[in-house]
Image (cartoon, rainbow, N blue to C red):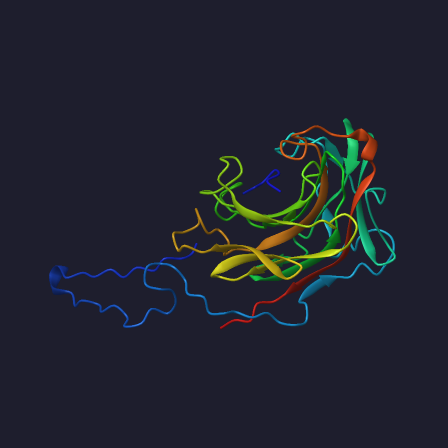
Amino acid sequence: MYTSFIGKVLVAGFLLSCAGGDELKPLPTEPTSGTGDGKPTDKGWAFETTPVWADEFNTNGAPDAAKWGYDLGGTGWGNNELQNYTNSQNNAGIANGVLTITARKENSGTNAYSSARLVTKGKGDFLYGRMEIKAKLPSGRGTWPAIWMLPTDNAYGQWPKSGEIDIMEHVGYDPMKVHFTIHTDAYNGAQGTQKGDFKNVATAFTEFHLYRVDWTPYALRGYIDDQKVFEYVNDGKGSSTWPFDKRFHLLLNVAVGGNWGGAQGVDDTVFPKAMEVDYVRVYKMIEK
C-alpha cells in the first residue's frame, strides 16, 4: 500500500589471520545454510495447519481490541489520499461473520471522506508464516483497498528501508487487476522499481476470494485463490533487497483517491463503498 510507508540476511564472514604466527582458522567444510554466495537455500518449508493467530469476525460490533488497533487521521498518508481514518463502527464494524471497512463521502475531520485502517501492530506481529485473508473488494473509480504488511520495528530505517508486503491491492479505475507487490530500499514505489504482479479477477467485487502470502527465509510467494501470481526470492545481498527477516504486522484499509487510487479521479457517486473480510488467518512456518 506504499502509504506512510515506512519502509538481512546476516552474512557471516570468517577472518583468516597469519600475523604473529597465529594459526589459520579453517573455513567450515559445509555452510550451515545458504549456497555459499550469501543466498539462502529453499528448504521447502511447510506451514502448520492450525492458525497461530486468527480472526473469524464472529462477534458483532467493533473489531476485537485485543487483535486490532487503528491508524487514525487524514494527512494524506504519503500518497495524497483524501480520506480521514477513524475508529468509528460507521467505518469498521462486524456483522453476520464479516468485517466491513467502509469508505464514505462525508465530512470527517478536515477531509471530505471517511474510512478505516485496521492494524495488528503490537497485537499480531509475525516473522515468516502463511497469511490468508478472504475478502470481497469495493468497486468504483477512486477506491483503493489494500491487505498488506509493514515492519513492526523498522529495524533498517523508515520506509522503504524496512520493507513492505502488499498481499492485495486494487484501484477502482482498473477493475480487473488485483496486485501483489513488495517494496524494499532497492525496489520501491517511490522510484517506480517495486516488484510485483497481478491477476485478473473478474468477480473480485461480487465474490469472496482468498488472498495469501507464503513467507519464508528464501522467498515471498503471493497467491490468489491458491494460484501463485508472484515470487520474490531472497538474493542474499542484505537488507536493501531483503528486509524481510524481521517482524511484520497486518493492515486492512480502504483508501480514497491518492497518487495511484485517484490517478483517474474519484467518482463521488459510488460511495459508500466497502471491503468485506470473511477471515484473517496466520499459520506458523515449520522450522527445518
